[in-house]
Length: 378
Image 1 (cartoon, rainbow, N blue to C red):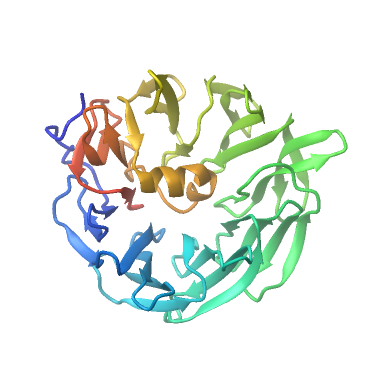
Image 2 (image 1 turned 30 degrees about the vertical axis):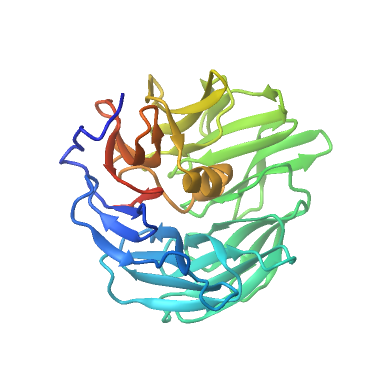
C-alpha cells in the first residue's frame, strides 16, 4: 500500500500549487515543505478555485469567490509565486477555467452567467490586471492561445471554429468542425489541430496556419479526444464510437504517420510530459462494484503502472472530464518529467496530495493534505 512514509526525491525541481484541506491556496516544495500561503479562506464565506501557474513560472492566478454579500462575487487574482505584486480584477461571471497566454502576460477565463451559456473574458496582467474584458460567448466553449498571446483559436458550440483576436474580431478556420472539444494552436505557431467534418466522414486534421492548408491525419466516426505533445510532433488520441465502442488510446507521429497503441481500454484522461516523450494516462479498474483508477506512464518502450486510488472530488469533478482543455493550461508533471502529482485517496483510505516518481518507479508519497495540486513549469 502507498502511504505517507515514503520520501520525495530531493532532486525534484519546481513547486506545487496546492489547495489544502482547509481550502487555502499554498505554494510548497515537492516534498510539502517551505509552505507559502497565498490565499486563506473563511469557511462558508469564501472559496479559492482554479489555481494556475503562468508559463514562465513567475506568477500564479486563481479565482477568489466571496459569498458574504449573498450573490457570490468573483475576483481573478494574480501574485508572484511567493505572494508579492498582487493584482485583482472583478469579473461579472464566476470563472471556472483560467488559461495564461504563452507570454505570461494575459489570462483568458471562462465563466457561466445564469442561463446564458459560457462567456470568454481576458485580463491583461501586464497592463495592471485590474480589468476583465468580455470577448466572446457560446456553449460549449474551448480555446487555445497562439504563441504571441494576441489571438486565440476557439471552438464554440458545434459549428464555430475560429481565430479570435483580442479586439473581438473573428476569422473562420473551418465552417464544419467535427465532434471534438479543445482545439490546439501548436506552441511553435505553425499549425492548428482539430477535427473536421467532410463529405467522406470525420477526420483529425493538421492545418498550416500561414497557408491554410489542411492535411487529414486519420478518419474516424463518433467523437475524438486528443492532446498534442509540447513540440507538436506527436498527438495522443482516442476515438469513442459509442458507449460500448471505444478505440485504443494511440499516438500518431506527425512526421511519419506511424500510429502506436498505448492502451486498449477507455482512458478518461491523458497528459504529455514536459519533454513530450512520455504519456501519463488514467486507467479505470472495477473491483467488487467499486471503480478505482491507476495512473500509467507510457514511454514508447514500456508502460509503468501505479497503485490504485480514487481522485479527489475537486480533481475528479472539475478537471478530469475536461482534460484536453486543462492539458494546455496546467501540468501534473514535474518540470523534468521524472515525477507527477495528483490529489486523491488510496486503498488504505489516506487522502491528500501524492507525488509519484517515474524514474525509478515506486509507491506514491503523500506530501500533504489537499484536494488539488498542479506543478510549476520550472
